[in-house]
Image (cartoon, rainbow, N blue to C red; front, side):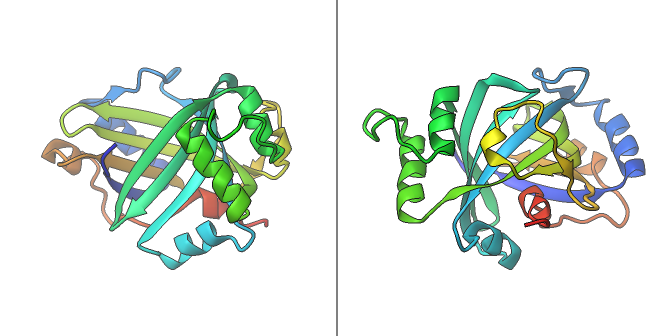
Length: 223
C-alpha cells in the first residue's frame, strides 16, 4: 500500500453538525457503518520506554505503531495493523487474526511459530521479543465515516473517545472504558494523490487548522 496524505482537525459539536450536513451532499457513508457510524476498539502497543508515545509527542518524522482492532463489538473480525508515518504521509498495513492468535499475543506466548504466522504478526512478535513491545492501552471511540472515490478520499468524525487499561480483557466487548479527559471531536481527512477541490472547500471552517492530535496519546493521560 502506498503512503497517503492525512489531516487531523479538532472540532466542537457545532462544527460536527455543520460538516456532517455538508458532506452528506456529495459523499457516501461507508458501507460498513450502521446508521452512519460504528464503534471502534483498538489495543495499542508500546515499548517499556514508551517510544511510540514519545515519538508522537516529539513529532518524530519517521515512526510506527502497532494496534489490534475490531468493530461494533464483533470479535469475529480482528485485525492487526501497523501504522507508519514518513515525511508527513501515512501508511497502514493490516492482516486478519483469529481470537486465538490475539490471545497468544496478549499472553506474549507465540503459540504459532514465526514461520507459520502472517508476516505482520511475525514482525510484531519479533519486536515484542527484541524491543519489549507490549499492550499499553485500549482506545474506544465512535466513528462516522464518509467516502468519495475520486482521490480515494475518506473523511471520518471520531468522538466519545474513551480509554481502558485492563488490556487482557481486550476481547471482552462489555469491558468498561472511561472518558479520555477532555478529548475533542476529531475529523480525519485521508486521500491519495490529490484532494478534490469540492471536498477541500466543504471541510473548511474558520479558525480550524490541521493538528497533531493523537487518540493514543490522549488515552495515555492516565498512565
